[in-house]
Structures are given as C-alpha cells and as structure tokens.
Image 1 (cartoon, one colour):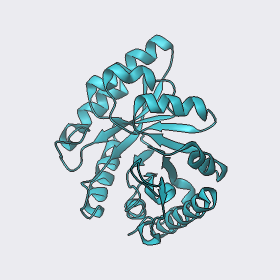
Image 2 (cartoon, rainbow, N blue to C red):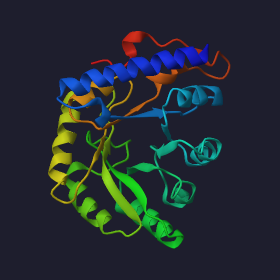
Image 3 (cartoon, rainbow, N blue to C red):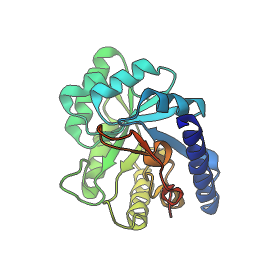
Length: 241
C-alpha cells in the first residue's frame, strides 16, 4: 500500500511542478524535486527511489550518513542545520549541502574538503524572513558571504536556499529571493535557487525556484511512535498555490 500511495503522490507533485514551470515560461526539466526523507522508514524511501526520485534530502548529520550508506545510488542533499564539528559526516558525501549560512561554516567545510582533496557543492542559506530561530545569513550580508565563499578552494557555490516564514503567504518571500538570486549572478554564475516545500512548492516554482524540497506531499504525515506510522495526506495539501 505504501508503494502505491507514494507513487501517486510523486505523480501529483510532479504534475503540479510541471504546470507551475510552464505557467512561468520554463520547462519542467529545469525543476529539481528533492524528496525529504526525515523520519521516514526504509520501505518509503525505496518506494520513492523506484519511482525515479533520486534526489533525496536529510536534516540530521548522523542520519544523513546512514542514508547515504544505505542508498548509495541516490543524490543525497543535506538540508538541515550543520554544526562545524559535524561537517565530517556530510562533506564529500553530499551531492549538495543546502544550508551554509555563515562564513564560519563555509570555512570549516572548505578546510575539511581541502584535506580530503575534495570540492563540496553548496548553497548559501538566506534568512529571508529575518527569523531569529532560523539559520541563514541576513539578506544584506549575503553578498560579502557569497564573495568570500567563492574564494574558498574546498567549495563550489551553486546557488541560494531559503525557507520563508511559516504560516505566511510565501509568494512575496519567494519573489524577494529571486531578486537576490538574480543580483547574485553578478558575483558568479549561480544555477540553483532552492525554495518551496510541500504546501507552496508550485508557488515557489512560479516565482523562479529551480529546486524544491518536498516531504509531506510525497511521504504523507508521520505520526508519533505510539500511533500508526502513516496517515493519508489530503490531496489539497499537494503543492497548493
């Protein structure tokens, strides 16, 4: 049953993203869907991979390392908060580290990768809503961080990432991020703008996202341990606009 539900969910998400891309004058092929596997069981991940979802994201360093070892054929994105003393779990294993929000973290990643003879692809996280509880660089500090990060030999800066304030209309925040991303092209070519999650991924694509991070709309809600693992996710929750 899990396989059938996840297959249907992925199909709905892809259809919503394709429609949003076409509405914004782009090809659906320009949009990368990252399935967020946080707290999901192996059978759910296997079902998603069987449907061709090979870009997957994890939030916690130790769990990320386990997922990479278990599913080496996938492109694993690290999307959570990363402490400098945990870069060893992620550097060199991640297809993309999406949450570099400080020069200190960028330098720690670069040092580790230099010693290992690697270059780690990263996104710079912008705290677009200026929320104290969230990571990321403030918008006005983005360009100094971008310029510094591009000089670090162990990093390859591919773009920007943001998480707008929860419970608000995401469109203005997405538009603001697109504006920053477009201005940042003057510093260097940035191909990736990662923004949008289950509730607003279609809106994010309409506003210029090239990558979205989707968990609930693919895998459904995960209940507490004392209850059933899976419950059906209402269809209106899939990439609503």
